[in-house]
Length: 282
Image: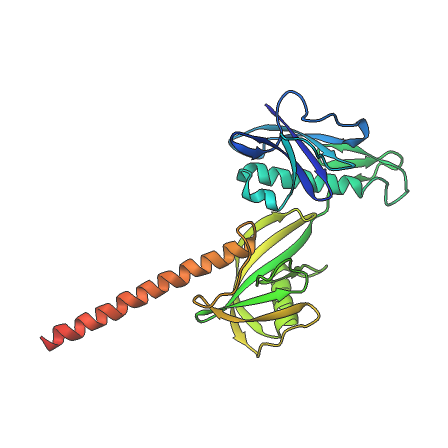
């Protein structure tokens, strides 16, 4: 079993640098001397089919600097350099760090909480059990013929356009949330809602659930309190879109492939019709 050391400070994860690039520190000893109060927990993870890890998780009081063999990197940015399984595990460990920091005391009696299992705590007085809470959100790709609906939210970091998204409210289904968010943000109605895929979104503790849908009715009216811009776009006039780390990009790439396939079939159909016409003339 491999020992991995996940250390975090203000949204950054500690990585080690070597000839093969950067990765999560591993080995018989931690990459730096951690203080006793910095250790969070040790997780025995076998959630992946290829590897089995023993993960030591820490929250650092200050970032690691002045080391040629180590560097701090934003968790989201690390997606571009880490193997997919290590990135997913780094996200899980980051969520545990965040949860530990925000669950020191019992919400019922106020007594200290202690770790009970790898992913749960128990109150030292009343015995209440506690598990990390996920914030579930939806994201939806809405199409209208050969067009896709893209929006730019005020909280986006950058100039890119993405998809309508929002958090699920108490007492509603995922599909109801999809309809509500699209209506609130764009004032249009949708139909043919279909599940696409889901993605852990550890910023700080979310689960993003992706859907596809089709335009049904309504005129586009943007919710200006949430959105800075938006509109319908064809595949040949797309603005800047999200990077590959996001489920939004996977939804858009799937649409681009599908629309490209339809375009190719249309070209073949036109060619077939032209060939048929010429054959009749002959």
